[in-house]
Length: 287
View 1: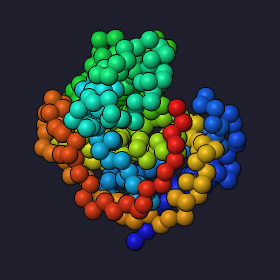
View 2 (view 1 turned 135 degrees about the horizontal axis):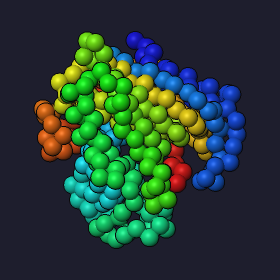
View 3 (view 1 turned 90 degrees about the vertical axis):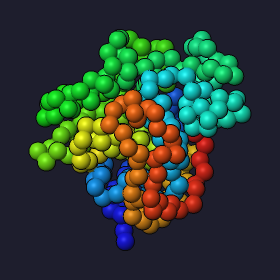
View 4 (view 1 turned 180 degrees about the horizontal axis):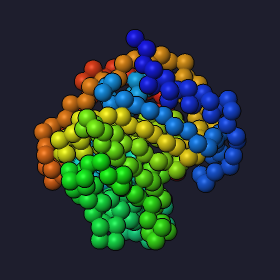
């Protein structure tokens, strides 16, 4: 059974390879780039975990919980993911902490690696405002408002961030039949390594917020500004787009009814039932 939703993502990568513009970039690797893309995922049609290669699911869950608690310490993310702050254990943010975070003068030791005021800080303490709690309150009390937004793009803090936010703004919308949908605006998207992770992360956030607010889920819309494939990822992308996607899995979540009860959950409490991805495809992350 073909998965037309994942095919939309694969078609986007093929379009970039075929029609994109080759450009230099910050990392020095170079990219093939298209500006302005959009993909849609029906969250009632299975959970959008890409099946044409293996998704690092536990990394997705741990990073989202880390954002939601407001932490900006990479070693705290390690603790959520691995159960330890041991320096031998890595996360997807370790390289950024050791390179950009250290260059900015943020604390960087075996037990603490600060990244500056990245996502968690902006979500939970934007100049004293808790955007995440405000979102939940707004969805409960004014569900049809057009102002259900969380932004990570705090201009005053950008120069202190180890990495300025790629996924900059997410807006939520409640339909007449009480379905919660979300739309992410992502200014910059690594289509091969990053985007499958981003899709899963914000789809999971939508499920979590829906459960807290006693809503059903609707759709996830992914809007991208600079959509790019790194030049050293071409072989990996060509391998992936040859593969036939299979049906999305089902998300299994623990019980919770508040933000605090979500933050008491563990990574292993979140499961993808029926997830049968194809083999991993390795590609190096540009930092």
